[in-house]
Length: 178
Image 1 (cartoon, rainbow, N blue to C red):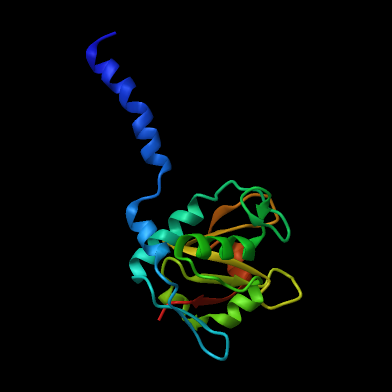
Image 2: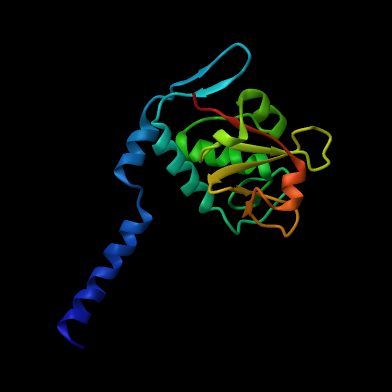
């Protein structure tokens, strides 16, 4: 075995360890006291992190869940997620922000925005025939796409906003950012 291959083999454990570690900037962000202002109307406003940094963190955390099984009422990686459980998990783990549990309550706690103003990290809501106008929620990731935990096909995946099923059922765009 030549010298360059030996060096590469010696470096592999260190590279793998680095991939599994948390970057220093994330630890600093999550170790800060949560500065989430809540009004008496139970609105959630995220103020403790830069919007662009938050968007990147939310998208990365959401993308890391692709392929995770759907489970009604689910809220963790071990057993799976439903749509609002996935959103709650992503916001908590990416930004340290606690959100309400249901899509309906997330809609009530967020600020409605014009769909043309959607940015990565905002929420998209749908009426998929549930008992509430806001029966399904996804995380907008840009370029007309969102991540969600649908019960059909059983895994977290990305979807186009233009998908006829979702376009017909779209009921609003919301944000927790100012």
